[in-house]
Image (cartoon, rainbow, N blue to C red; front, top):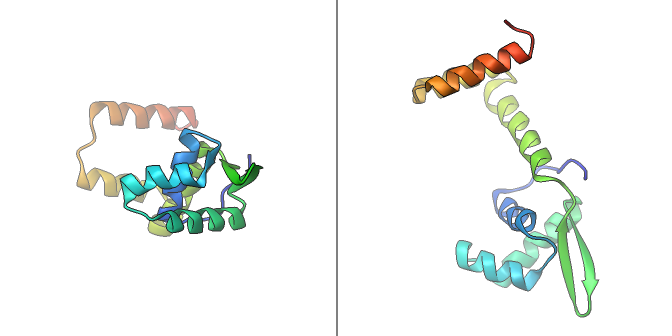
Length: 125
């Protein structure tokens, strides 16, 4: 699978459904997303077309309908979104991200231990 180009929040809902179960027809996606997001079938089809154009999903003909599948793994997308967030909001620095998080929420002992383990793993004893 390849790296996913930037996608909107709405498109990410479609991708989440496809990562959970693929392939799926537009009608099936519309039924699920219509219930959870309040979207009309035309909205889901528009989002699927955008994702097709971005190369994020594939469409395979199945009789009179198409079955859609993701072309990018969820973990790869999460990684690229995380890097993008850090770059956009914190100038690429991890320390400001952790500082911001810590100022909003107290770090638990497990959080501190996990951060220490990550630093040790990276060779920063």
